[in-house]
Amino acid sequence: MANLKVSSLTILTLAFLSGCSSSFFKVKAQDELRMELEVSPDRVFAVCEKASDEAEIYMFIVNVLDDHGFVIFVPQSNVLDKETCMERSNGANEIIASGKIITIRGSGDLKPDPRTEVHEVNFPNYGIRKTNQQILPFLSISNERGRCVLQWQADFPPCGLEGFPIK
Amino acid sequence: MPKKIKKKVVIVRKHPRHVKVSAKNPEGITIVDQHLRILNSLTSDEILSVFKKYDKAKLVYPTRNNGRKEFPSEDLFDEIIAVWTDYFSKQYPSSTPLDPDIIKALLATESGFRIDPKPTKLAVGIAQITRETLKILQDPKGEVKDFIFKKIRIMDLKNPDIAIPMAVRWLFRKRELAKMKLKREPSVEEIILEYKGLLKSSSTYKESALTKFRGFYGKLKSK
Image 1 (tube, rainbow over the protein chains, first blue to last red):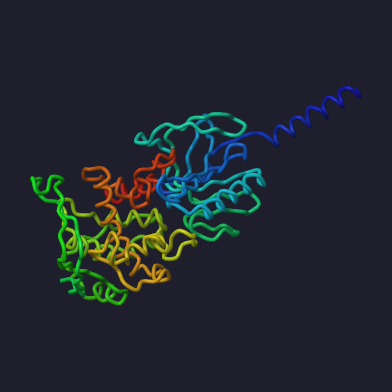
Image 2: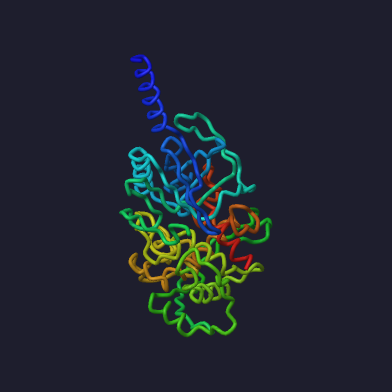
């Protein structure tokens, strides 16, 4: 009996732990203009990349791993200076690190764009993963604690964004 | 009719000019001394005055969105876009006139039609014109010396009446630059990449910078 109790406790603990660390990706809502994704923190990270060989121009991008193991690019549509871009990617990665449910909002849909090339992205915890020509222009990233990074508005709660929540 | 703008004449001391290759000019270039060049320019007051007095009867307007709007103010700037696209098309005639929908879709990607989006150190206002671009657009000896703006301050770029004409002028210049770089007529997307400074970029994410533009421009063209 004692063994059974221990074993049940172990199973419960393992189930709890696995529940806590379970990885997920879902399309929470969408309409013809916008989309809202919800993912676990292991499936998302933000980067700031120098985008020009000629000028100090940077791009802020959120990389998301979908439920088929493909990388979705979520890029900000206007280019940035290095400082702003780093602030944004550091802010987004803090949101990811301190949250359990990460919400990514974008405009458009996840229909693959055949005009784009397939790339490889080194995903922490998952290794090298390929893109599937899915690009969702960035609007915001936030977590369940109310922290957010927004494309054009100031980053403070309640992180309101026109057109959201999607009805 | 567009308002007559002030024309300032300057003496260009030395100026290389392409000529027919000959024994005298084996490289096809000659140096022309001391000739006159007419400078066109607009101040912020003149920009406002040109817009006010512009003949709007035969303008080509950007496509209006009568359905669900992605951005609340997306149709608010259509007249400014139409006037200045027409104005600069007359200044820089081309066999392929610039489509005002390109300007509208550009504003969608740059600011979502916000006149004062969250500031960055690089760019300001609805068209996200950079400090460097503002300098170039006002330099009488610079790359756009044939048509410049005068006495425009960085804070003026928060006014769409000023920022949009400057963006249109810059886009005309970018089309010219893209043509020179590619040695052919650039596509719409190549002009936008040049505006963003990404035409010759080797970044993995270069293409993704176009997605928003493609989506919005595509929607305008399908209406």
